[in-house]
Length: 410
Image 1 (tube, rainbow, N blue to C red):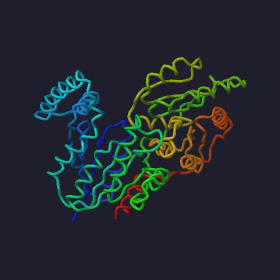
Image 2: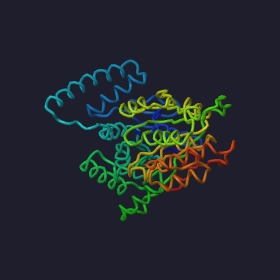
Image 3: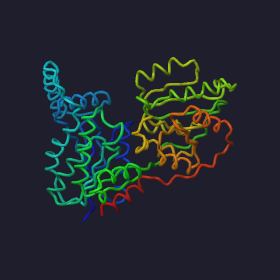
């Protein structure tokens, strides 16, 4: 009998979305281990033709409008009857949304309702899977996984890509409370729950002490994509950042630290260039454009393969965390891509000893993201570093993550 797993993920096969890249890596690793995969994802993802992939819309008008906009933005193709149904449902959702707007009723972000539609559709694909693996992103896949676990009587594994609760998580106190209740329910009802950092696991075990034995952690890891290339001949040190900048994850303190170096006599504009690839919030973009140091180049969003090619062309890869307490229990997914390139990493971290140890143990530089002198020190280390830094090979891969995941659920 072939081994089979049901994978539930709102995001999958969406180039440029780290939530999708995460699960795509895991699916490929499971396939390599001989598993047959059935994947349920949202409707705004590209079809994975290598596996049984069912794409399902959310029932919320606001949620479906988001999905429809993503389908158009990403030019995701549907044909015939599917295209007609999607278009008609979009018109209905827009009408309902406008009514709610007139009545001044809030509809929420909508993706949580995906568990209703995904559960109904999944009933047509029931069989004795070896186990159910849900991951997110949104919590909706976990709710579907729990319902199916109860129906099928098989084990399920819920993976939080980021914790649902904790300091600085949630738009307000009510949202934070709701997320905490949801997190506790998922942990209680799942066979096993995994976080992606040791700090997040410890926090959850302490908070949900009655269910602590159900909680573990797995580093997602990454495979190197793209190819090693000769770096472009450039007298300046090419510092490259891959990913989004928003809220307190910004370059404000890095820029201030560069000005400190300039005040001390360093020719900053001829020493460094900073290349940014990814989405940047408007307020951060405005502040960057006001900087008098003309060393920052903004390139916009690119796909993962091209991003990794840019990483191989860099001298230094920049890693930036939010300067609030959500950073204590999270590790940016791009960290694993960075670690596999062999390029020096400059980490601007916030209260995260786990990530700091990970970088330092691999031969990279860690700074306090909220301390200008710490960042200045990191920049000086780059300037004074030898031609070849003693960077250690990274063994954090999806294959290792998959092996640990299977061991936990079994």
